[in-house]
Length: 73
Image 1 (cartoon, helix red, strand yellow):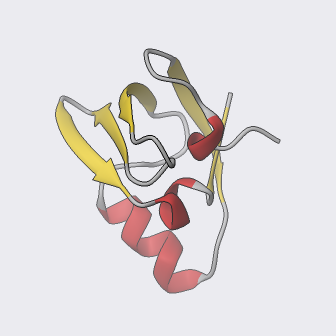
Image 2: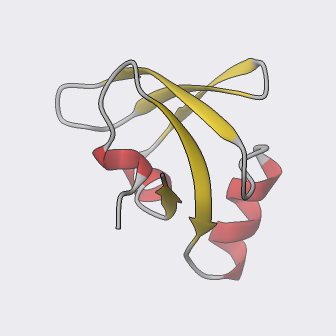
């Protein structure tokens, strides 16, 4: 299983599945990250937290806790 937090800078990935409990999953979906969404990895901090992504035409910084719950291909 490949998660968003394990991707490298410059990769383009698609969301396969969202994991996590109800509140966490809903928060991720409210940010526009849903199944099938294309995500471009802009930057990754040296320790992996946060991850800066481009999703649905806007830039978003995600904490590693959220990025670990997003399964990508």
